[in-house]
Length: 560
Image (cartoon, rainbow, N blue to C red; front, top):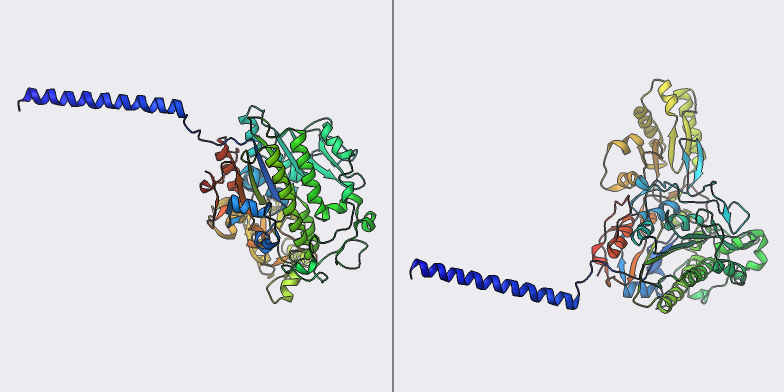
């Protein structure tokens, strides 16, 4: 074949392929215009964030056979279960927990290092959400003088407000002020919490509004809360509660006016001796009241009624109150979770009806878990016990007097941290890092602690695993102390009855994480997830900006 014929053939093939490509593009464009390209996000009408205060992961499995099909089992069976979900910082307390869930980061970044902490600037203890520049709404007490101003970063709820040009509503609800204020974020339409005592009302702060909406006033003036002034009996036959210990034992507190912790608990008789409406917080009825109010908020605020995604943040706090009083192994904690499951079923049913069964997304997690009562552990021949912090400080003060001639070199001891007087150390011509190290070695010699770290170590190193990694994520350079102490596993500095939390150990860090609803796959994973992964996962689902301090990562396998 001649050269000219080859060139003509090549040109013909080129024109043919080019024309085929153009036609294919046109067909693809026509098809996309007809069918629409899938959006890279999900647009539920409502996101419901649920935090269960002091919920260990094994409460999900331990009481499984008692749960209804429409509550926790529905979330597990039809949603995505992250079975190896942990807090990646300490201390594991309520305020840092709620802040971390909603900011996608840890106290090292968001700055909520405890429920209370020593403020190095003022030399005083501060509470995580107290703000006396605002007034109470719904009560004449100071219980409403709160705001999120101590949280240093944005929340997933803030980012939703920004993304929707403030059209998407954010409402946060909890018995505890911190359980509502911190999830609501800086830009919430409202955060409400329960004021007990003789009032039994839901209140808020002028940070959000100057007067309560009509639906809140209507709720407060109804007899809904008053209706829970009744004896607390077990929902099922107590003999069927084989997943918990005996009813009367030496590991539980009991209400003032009772002789022991046995069921039933006659709340009307115990009412005045136990703070009137405050007693309800220490029973599963507190969770039912929270559910009642959350449903009222859903209806009163018309949440999920338009195409702009709204957010309802709910924190169930009674589980924490009951756990602290009666302990991890009590009949009371079992009954509380069986009843909570029914409250969750009731909430989901209302969401189905009001928002639409396939139109909302839910996540459920906890703000921390809890340790078994150490006295029960030791009686069971398992390592555990109590740290005598007063005796430890007496011994440590003797060391300070002998070494430095004064105890004033330590300004404060709180949240398992020591705060030192940096000016005094400088005036004594001492090195801060050397003093910190000397203190750490002294404390480790007492046998009360599994490890002690210094602020210098937190500043100088970048830990990637183990206890120092967890401590570093909880260490805020501006607000945290100079020496960080970790008690031995199973040991607590607490009363001898009831459970508590705060440590970096699995019994305090391992909590449920369930995703359910629109845009969520069905499935489960044993791959480790961290609490700071929740907010970026929801952000990725919605296609909105991550919270400003995010250090977690989206859990990709959760999203459809």
